[in-house]
Length: 152
Image (cartoon, rainbow, N blue to C red):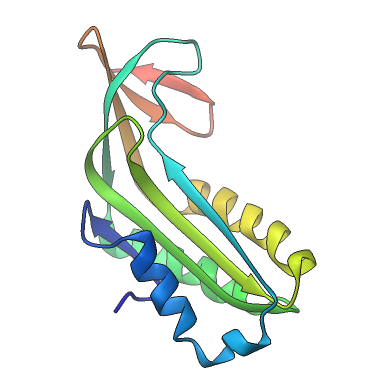
């Protein structure tokens, strides 16, 4: 069974596992809406270069703590029933799933803003690093804050 949040090696958890965990939450009967975000590997950089693969690394214990704090904080919001955040680490091809964020709430008005906040917060608060390898073999560490790639 899936935990509420977590950092997982590629293939350890699926979106279906997370939805099963959510459906087993006894509070789900209070919910009228579920909003989901699935982050996938983009096939090109912001400036149009073609991506071959993405490596994702994490300081797992700290990242798990950050994801847990974010989910616990957002779960306290009025009308929010549950918040689940799961990030994968490893080597990924274009189109593969990287992260799942799921928010259940009383209505659509309760879930969309919390979903957006969860995504923005994990990107800034969890120690996760992404390295893009381009079709030409060059690799770059992706920096979310700068909105750019930094060549290594």
